[in-house]
Image (cartoon, rainbow, N blue to C red; front, side):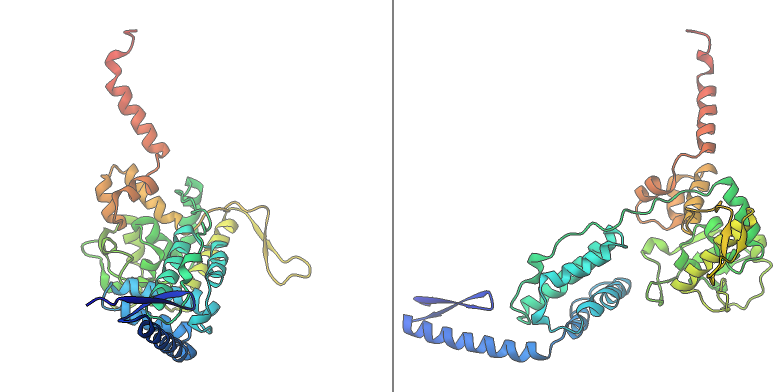
Length: 369
């Protein structure tokens, strides 16, 4: 039988309704409820730090529910962004401005998509904390949306950059790494994780099965489509044939002969790009009062980024007349629209070929006007 009388209580901003047969009983039960909530909240919140709750949240709501790659992504966001900023705080003390500060700082250097993932992670963590009465403040309501930095525009390398790349790749320790991206279109993390037992030299196939994550761990590629086979073109085949290796060795290693990490990939690319500029005619010098060498005259290779080699592979596929759906599979894209919009801009070769085909088609109309 429904209670005839109901009393509303508010504890730290959250409303509760308590019923009773009489108004006196309802009020008495309401005060008991208030005391229980306040005592319980004090007991739980006293020792529950954000870092502890975040770990509990991953174990309870993510592990075994979503795939391992996504679990690692959540842990990475917690480790890199959340714990350093508020991990030491009690869950009950966190407010929306604490989350906004994390997002604001991330937005200065990270993409909008990455900032969005951080925001969603924070919101999920504190939504469940609120639902579990670990905090009596709904932090999510005050969290703002930050756009982040504009996405980096990828491009295909120029003929001059290709010439310099092939020249430097002959002697630089990162040469094979760059050539695999150029001739096979692998992502940097996929190259870093590639082992020789996934390279079939007889059939001339690279089997992409692993990738190095931002956390440094080796796992599956970013999506199911990332697990794929890529043909080894002749220039890459000839280079691979010159390598001495064991079956479980990494195909590419850093300057110290170890597996590439995110930082060592960055350092390798800085060194490789510097050598490209030297090959283009730049000289090195040490300015007065400086410990570091600089390049003179002005750099020839400037805006080129490592990922542009993967972009070039997509454009090369177009120039070779490879069907878009095949290119999508070779590059490991989930959505063919990504391939179409991002990696297959109309090149000069494709443009000239289209012009020749249109001339042939319309040749019969020539002189009729």
